[in-house]
Amino acid sequence: MDENFYDCIDCGTENCPCYLALTGDCLVCSRLSGKDCCDCDWKGVCVYNEFIQGGKRVNNIRNEFEAQVKEKKKYEEGTEVLVLEVGRGFALKCSWPGSYVFLRCREDESFYSIPISVLKSDIRGGKIHLAVKELSAKSKRILTADTLVVRGVYRNGILGIKDIIGTRGRVDTARKIMIVTKGIGFAPAALLIAWIGGRTQSDIFIDKDKIDEKLIEEYLPECLNGKVSYIDLRREFEYKKTERVSEIYREGGHNTLVVLTSDYYLSEIGKVLKIDAKSNNYRLCCGEGICGACSYTDDFGRTFKMCKCSASEIPGIFDKF
Ligand code: FES
Image (cartoon, rainbow, N blue to C red; front, side, top):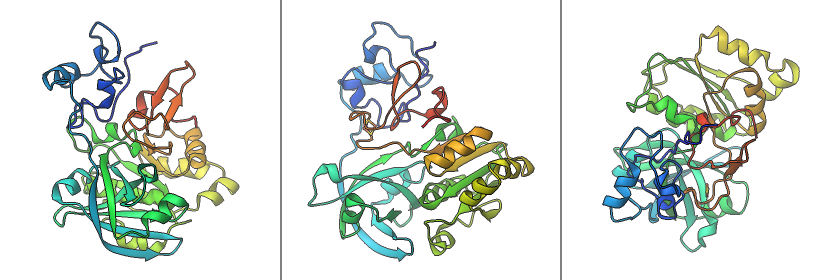
């Protein structure tokens, strides 16, 4: 079994080397994970060299900062969209698909931080839009605030997104993408569609359960180059099993499938179709690969930090939850 197939979402970015280099737990570099030789598969800038040349420091720590809530828009199904003023540079970083940030109230302890996917990035206005569903303690708290403490940007909100972004930082136009969303999974889908910018055909199938149709109408990017269809996943799976989803995929001539739903539907769809990217439903707590809340252990007993690992290299990750 090849040991060096880890792919870290932050590797080679402005946030590399990270805290894991400091503690000798780098997911990619063998030298920075306890070995005395170089045998990684990474084809970008050498992480070890960067770490040594940079004075053995973490690069560009994601510091917390305060952001004003410029607007709060209420929708049905207990959802609110918060519009935060974050500055153009930060908004630009948030425009990449899979982006999410941690939020908490100024007066709350750090353990109140909650990861929220970016729904829309308004780069010119220096604002980000975040859809928050009121569920429990953390989400209730942030919906009360006029100023929020933001930490980010984190990149791994969609597992497998690295493959779709590709090495040149733009979508491969040969892809014909089918996106399936349910509930708040619409948020990362909207950002993905905005990033694709109509450069390739993307058809979106939305399950409107637990999300207000008005929010969908308002935030579905106009640049979508493809069809918008509504699907009731519960009915589909109850009455027709998985056949219709695979029929839609095949009839539409799609070659890439992005599923942004709960684990149950991910698992059901994954049984009949190869999923190329999926929502990161792991418990994200620190986002830095430190706390271990997002750990996944495979059949070989190896543990992966799913806030960092790009999933496509991990055996079994797309069909096991
Ligand atoms: S969220 Fe803390 S290690 Fe992944």
